[in-house]
Length: 376
Image (tube, rainbow, N blue to C red; front, side):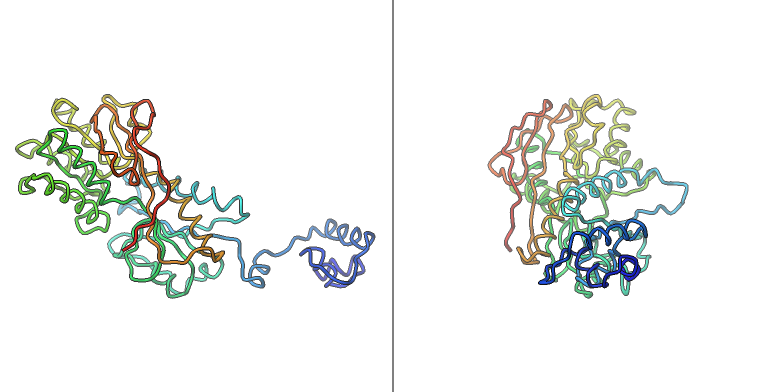
């Protein structure tokens, strides 16, 4: 800026006023403006956004913290492909909100594997973002605690695992699994299998099991002989889970599968054993995939809507940054149950604020609703 001022023959303050559109009682003539703009063009000058951010306490950058599912073997990367797809949708969702506001995104990777990985403590990157969207907080890897201690505004995509006043936005996993399980029982199923996405003590597993058991108990179905298996992200484990569930006697007549990639292993094992779907076993998947509607039979799936979740979470972060909302809210979005051939499920529409159903032609059979807040 000093070099621009020297070449244009003006003060540094004059250049600053022009670049920052500052008002002043001293009028800058058109001739002076042209000299300054010509000097800027000749020198190839552009303002230092980082310096401006430090001065204005605004960086115009939003951080997105995502788990990096690094496999134990660097050559064994097939088991993280589904997560890569979800992360891509989250990035798109955040961009939908940041781009119109002229904000950029900085990706914070989190290494989550067997408790390893450095924390965000004293991470200088935290100083250069206005706020943080923190996807899928896991209390086993509580790196969000460093951001909270640093006083950085943040919101969670997923349930808040802390006592801190951090806003969270997610699908109501308990209610969704309650409604799906209840609908299966009402359709005549008494032996319903449950394949979780992760281990039993994972936060989402606890919420989903709660809804699953609530529905069974309410409908008078004993949980004593219900096959429930923890999930895994490794191909060998998922293959074994698929085999184990069909070795279970008596064979479940319906299975709720907790993740879309695990559903592919289950589907393949059914074909290998000659088990017909939906005639012998009906399938419902938590997590939709673009391939599901093209399979034979096509798979009924609950569409989580990662892009919409990320967009709404980012919108809530901006609302807090702008002082329009207070942190510490628990917010829920409706997902969409896409009913296809593997299970003609009819979910009770008495609770339309949790999710709506969509038939195979894309027609909604439930009421679409907006974000809601759950008060505890």
